[in-house]
Amino acid sequence: MADKQKFLIEQFKKYKVFLYASGPASLSNAVVHLILPSGKAVLRFKEGRLKKNKMTQTGKKYQFEVYIKNSEYPNYIDLLRNEKPLYFFYDFTQGLSYITTSDEPVGEAEK
Image (tube, rainbow, N blue to C red; front, side, top):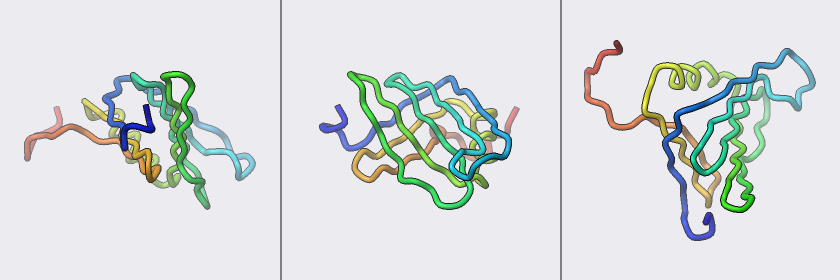
């Protein structure tokens, strides 16, 4: 499937957060799993140098490994807690990834 399409964008409705105490530099400080219709996205929040994002496919299921600066963690958690619907985007060619909201009216206040 990834061979035929250049990117994937899917709405997701569930996530899981893992927070780790300090440890070896190779470990993530925080990990967020996004449960996708096509599989799972693992967002790894790290200090220092980031690995390249990657995707693996087993049958029809994907697993996306996305590396993000640890300082961005509060922004991601804010979106996950306060916005809906949310979408996961992954570019198969370049390995770029993000999460996004749908179009929202200008000036819409949070309730």
